[in-house]
Image 1 (cartoon, rainbow, N blue to C red):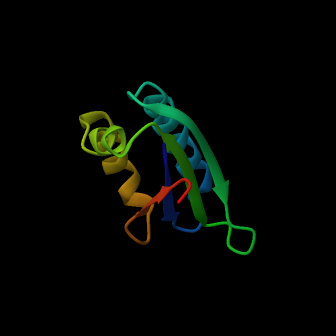
Image 2 (image 1 turned 90 degrees about the vertical axis):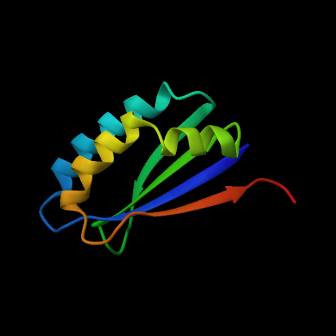
Length: 95
């Protein structure tokens, strides 16, 4: 199992727009092979920094989802409200 941490910096005033996109993304991700769970968080100090934690069964499951047309479509819409490109970090459990 791996955890994927996605960090997004959204433009001021775009919180509700981002939340709509995030819901669509989560709905699409739930159907991805290997999906275990997902969680959306935002910074305490900076409400315009958003974090998504996704648990997938394997790195391959994540890579397949990352390259999928469904994800690319939603991310392309989302990119217009980001002030920086999203940052993706893969995390391993255990040693």
